[in-house]
Image 1 (cartoon, helix red, strand yellow):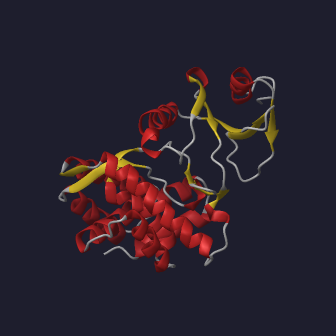
Image 2 (tube, rainbow, N blue to C red):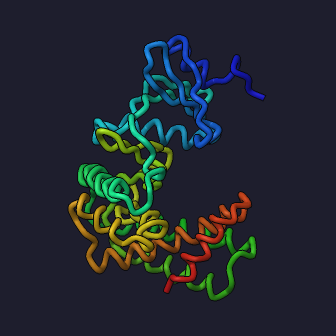
Image 3 (cartoon, rainbow, N blue to C red):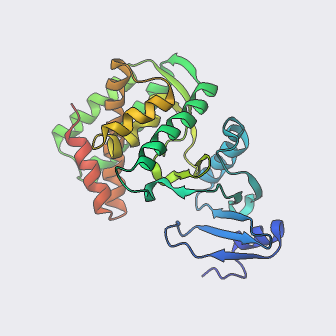
Length: 278
């Protein structure tokens, strides 16, 4: 068991900041600590269990954080050996804590569109086939995992394979994508904040809307309107159809992870998305 005396997160923070105290915050993942230094400045220390996610998140903050100045944390310390990061805290409340249907919820989606639009605009590459081929392979791998676990029927497997074919044969824009872009990673304050870059990489631009589309917008289409008003560019019919195909990835990954983590709500979400695929 890690104690406060050998916790890499605390050791990193104390080396960079001096004395710190832990802020008890039950909603944080167990691998993240909320810390305050002697001057009252707030930070987060995060230790990754997988080195590739640590490397990806560090690279994202150092490389693409400059595109989002004023909206994202800064890296103030790192320890490569233990895959630990020390980040400044972006002020604000988590957007998933605001009341559903409130003006703050709509404002969050509008500002989220503005900020993601900045990142996509700065890093966009015109249509190519490479990203679609890669995503089709990824969908095929997840489908095979679901099939081995007995989570999908023959018809559902064929439906997923059809969507993999669509992705493989579609030219699509790529951009640097957050890939977990949803309210739990947004902060509402004087300015819009964004955190959790461990999934960030170059991917299909439209895919960055998938979690919002299948987890939020279908039940609240006014939030989709607010988002794309901020983003500055609504989806055309071709892009909307492509987004539907990304639902296949959302569905099968949710099914597999829900099964592996014994997470009934995630499994149910995957089943719901899978049922609407054509």
